[in-house]
Image (tube, rainbow, N blue to C red; front, side, top):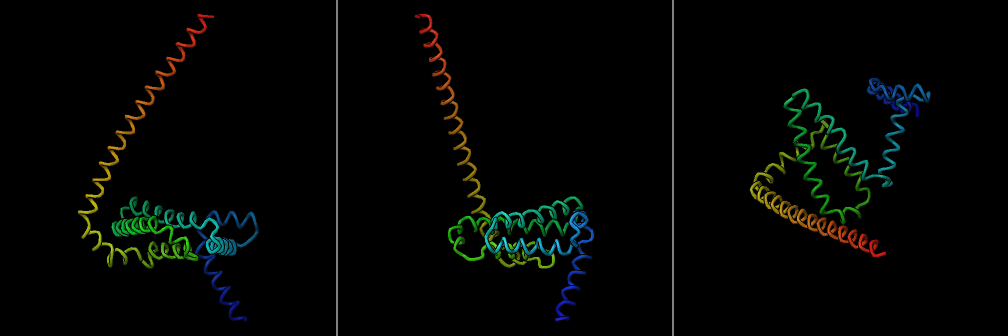
Amino acid sequence: MDAAKDALHAQLVQLRTSIDDIEFLQRLEDQTNVPKEYLSAGGAALLLVMIFLGISAGSISSIVGFVYPAFKSFQALEHRVSGEVTQWLIYWVVYAFFSIIEVFADFLLYWIPFYYAFKIAFLAWAMLPQTRGAKFLYDSFLKDFLKSNETKIDAALKNAKSAASKVEAETTKTVKEAAKAAIENVAENMKKSGDDKKEE
């Protein structure tokens, strides 16, 4: 039992040293008188419980998939680190591909227990610099798939763009016609109202 306590204490000390730079946690520790390593561990435990119980799991997984990668992408662009820029571009390609698959398989994914826990684990694996899972997926699968279907994808995007332009033109025309008819109707009603008052 003492060995387990010592191991836990060592992990908490290591956690504390890794989060010492976070000013928000220091302020929270000062306000609550609860050590920041306990606050961090408790927050992580609460987050895990929420994910496993499905409480806001979709929102949490979206935040995990966007916030850290967006921040690291911003840093890579601002500091002009070419390897980092490439890594985050690859992550966004993998994330987009995953999101497209998720949209079409959504009705099936609903029935998978702990889907969002698996999704968050997958996104963490894909984004973390230690694992570089996105690069692995891109190099072993996506690159070849996208290169072999590049012309089809470009054609589909071109068709979608022209269809969207046609829909926009038709919608604009319909809205203009409806607005014109509404203005004419209002003008006619105002004229009738004025004529009725004159007759009285």
